[in-house]
Image (tube, rainbow, N blue to C red; front, side, top):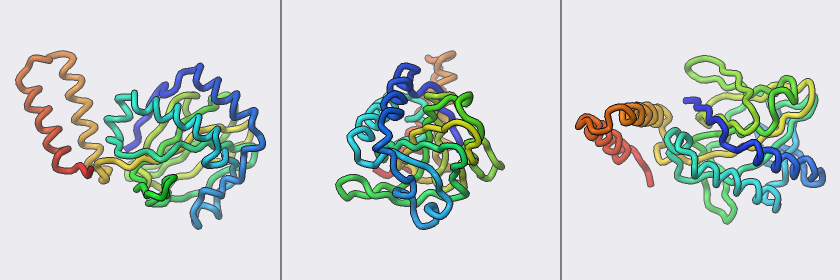
Length: 227
């Protein structure tokens, strides 16, 4: 399930983040530092050093925005979010086909299961050519290139890649989430049900059937959630 989250960050937040990222050349390191064995062979980009003060500062802003975003909560049902990281693809850089690792080590030693991957675009599509996020799933191949401040979430189990950048620079944040519902098909079903309930509630809030539907949603979540 691919879900676009428009305007996760405001234009002002994006401008402030870009100013700090663009002024921090010394903090950009080889992106292979956080790639697994498979990914390191096909990854060509730069990223802000994980654990740096800047990564933590900007990551906290992203996490705060996620916590306030009902679409993200509904689609992901997050239990834990990996601290966001920030990368940059310059001309000629790309990330070949790969599947994200199933587990990542959190600061402090705990592990997070990567059920959902996310990319937060921090450069507008007019700033660079190429650099599309290409995701393959059971419904085909999807090419994603969003406005600055928009995000896309998708199953971490998906085969995906970042196409070569041919002009400019693609700047983005990226992170993973462990969902309370690990199975993507079940998350998709709950998401569709939740969105339908919200649409119906806006029109017929006092209909007894709404209580029944909400009960179905929560009973399914109660059955499938791991907390």
